Length: 380
Image (cartoon, rainbow, N blue to C red; front, side):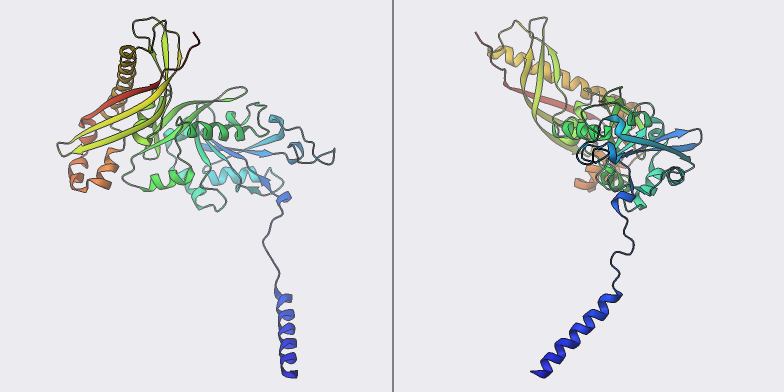
């Protein structure tokens, strides 16, 4: 019994001695001593990068305290402050900003990366190298292309969110859920740029207005350079074929009438067939509902529904033909990622599709089938 007691005492003494040497988190940084970057915008200024960070002002955020001592805060667009720096690299530009900010910049809560078209067209690999190495940048933040200056998108005066870029993030996520935005997050961008067969990358393009943002187009990248943008809703075939997403509504003329019908897609299926000729056949099936009509035609009659389906089919196929002509024939861009599909599912055809001239001359035939499920009800 005495021996057991002595052992317990010895163990307690050893634990006490070891606890003296434990110092806890030696490199911890209190949250109130960090400058949290909500968004990062990157532009070109002469031969340098111009980086702008958006930092929320805690005292002006609802729930952030302040003079009232508790739950106040003003919120709104005035609740953030912008800092801008320049440098020959992104790292230099952010270091320039740090010389102006009282606490260390913290990127762990950054939601949006805004890139101007000028930066995107020049190439983004060198700029992303810093972010890829930095441990604080999350892989789930959204890279977005901005028409005009990227930093201008940080100063919109929306009143629906306390932090403007939170509004932009929600806008993208809402349209992504509706099949109208592409879902390339920063981590996806890293992987796509590292894959030699992933020749095309799609990013969302937004336009900053005075009080809100507008989701405007799809930016098409070949490698790390933006080549051109597809305006909405002409981007429908890209959403259907690449992402199997619903895309945007289609407006067509009424059968036998001067009014219009708005067709809202509710589901998409697609099949891609590739042979050694080489030749690509893509069949797309879209089903949806009539969302609005200004027709005087009675759409409940079967032959009018068939005419409507044919009109939507023709409109989709016209968009697809335009994309094939501009992407494959004129720009030599494999928009529908046929090359990657060949290497993944048809390796025996790789030699045929790896020839430099294949993309521009590749026959890509796209056929649509449209089914109208509901025409809606009207009170009689």
